[in-house]
Length: 141
Image 1 (cartoon, rainbow, N blue to C red):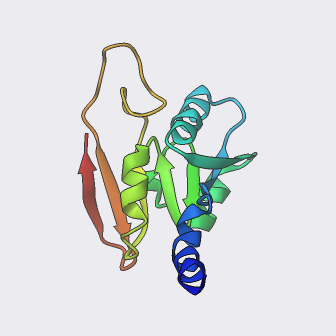
Image 2 (cartoon, one colour; image 1 turned 120 degrees about the horizontal axis):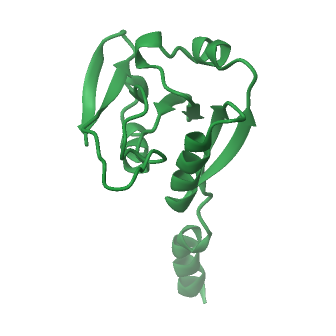
């Protein structure tokens, strides 16, 4: 019986359902691309807390998003920002890079998540902003 209890104690944590990853997303009420990006996140297993904002510039400034990296919406996950139409796979990778304040896809490139427009796909980079203020490309699509 003792061996059975010990075995159960070892596997019990794995049997518990993992808490889904959650992200706060700040967006303008009238942005359809933002809603489509949120759908992309949710389809990738990220639970979204959707915040409709009146002043996105103030939100970006508060979160430390430089204007040169700006896009239409801003997410926050584990204290890091996610600016614009960043693919969910890059968000998962960012979480392991604690030297980053956040990542961004500036503008709204066609073909990025939430900006799908038929067959058109613009090449774009996901830019990481390091805590020392330096930028680096963390992914290219």
